[in-house]
Image (cartoon, rainbow, N blue to C red; front, side):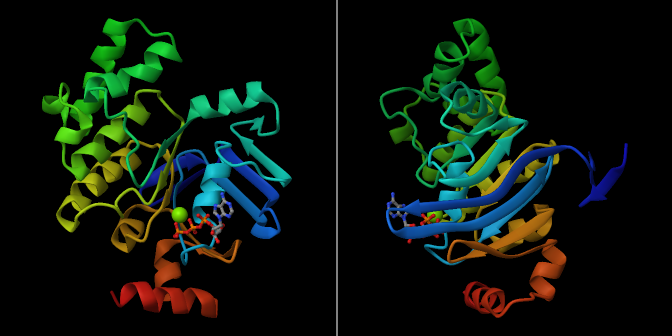
Length: 258
Ligand SMILES: Nc1ncnc2c1ncn2[C@@H]1O[C@H](COP(=O)(O)OP(=O)(O)OP(=O)(O)O)[C@@H](O)[C@H]1O
Ligand SMILES: [Mg+2]
């Protein structure tokens, strides 16, 4: 089997885990995704960037059917996303998602947030779910806060809990939608550090972010979207040093000047 090495990370070339072909989506009259073609290999780490309103969130939300596409095919680990509820459920078991605003349950402790889905969806015994959750909380360095409520934690801590909570479901793919953009600057690094650790563990990751340092050091590929299209994609090296389209150049000049 052919094996490629990118950013020091080896994976089988033919191991496609996400396949989008000719995907379109409309919100009413508004054409939000236009002919999206995307193939992601197992273990690949992808950063998606682009101007506000370009369809980044919509695209990744289509990958676990939080949004529905109207045309084209989306296949996740061999399972096609259609109206078939069984397929949707199967895909959602494999795909974890972390949002900008954490979305933790405020009335549950950190530990309860992490064990809720494993117990009720995966039917795991409570004790086992708790000990596993504690391992993930260790991994994001927040085990000492396990019995607090989300409101008692900082934004960076809450986001690390949200990541641990997703990992407790043992997803094959993790989607991140601007996970650090709601955080105070001093908390961004602690969350990015957790994501870098996750990347080095071989997780397939798609991350919408404008953290270009993260993109440079972690991503195998950077995808630039504008007006519902994938305009350009490349390795971070080439993406940043040699952007091909004017739209990409303009976008980079705007974000890199901040
Ligand atoms: N539920 C909806 N109904 C109608 N239009 C929507 C809906 N959600 C998003 N849109 C529109 O679709 C476009 C793409 O939105 P999306 O949230 O995917 O953009 P984005 O690239 O994630 O932007 P941002 O960087 O601001 O998060 C925007 O013009 C938005 O106004
Ligand atoms: Mg968005």
